[in-house]
Image (tube, rainbow, N blue to C red; front, side, top):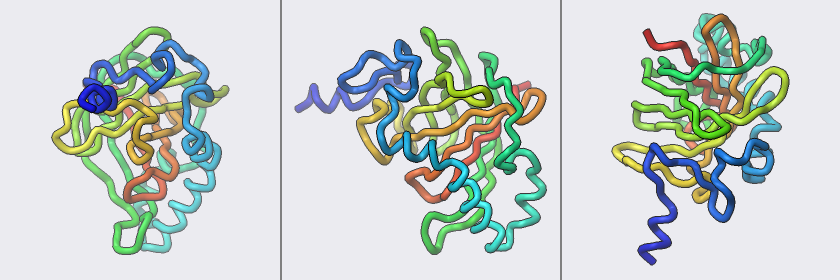
Length: 204
C-alpha cells in the first residue's frame, strides 16, 4: 500500500509522469495525454467563457470585466503562442461562481510563476499561492497551446501525477493577448468558479 500511495505523488520539480504511460514530457500530442473529461472541458472553453462572463455581469461586475480589456475577451488571442522560458508575474481571476454563495468575480494579487524547458515540452509552475498549478504546455493550434497539469493545495510540497485525481486535474488554453502578455484560460475548473484566467507577464 505504501508503494502505491507513493506513486500518486511527485515532487514539484518532477511532476512529469502519467500513470501507466510514458512521461508526459516525452509525449507531445496533448490528445494522447488528456483525460476524457479534460478534452471535453477544453472543447467547451467558449461556452464556459460566455457563461462565466454572463454570471459575473449579472452579479454586478460589468465594470470590472470591462476594465480587464483583452484579458477577459474570449477572442483576444493574437498568436503566435510561444512563451519564453523564465519567471513571470501571474494574476488569477475567477469568473462566474460554480455554486450559490460563492463570489462571481475574484481578482487575486500577483503570484510567481515559472516557464522552463523539460525535454521536448515546457513546464509551467505556479510557485506561490494556496492553489498552485503545475504541468506541461503542449502544441495546440495556430493561436494557442494546451496546458495540462494538476493543482497543489495549501502547504503541500508534492504534486499529484496528472490523471491520478479527477478533481486535481487542470486543463486550459495558453494564448498570447499582447506584447509580453499571455493568459491561461481554464474552463470549468473543479473548484469554485466557471472559468479561471491566469494572466502572465514577465517578472522584472
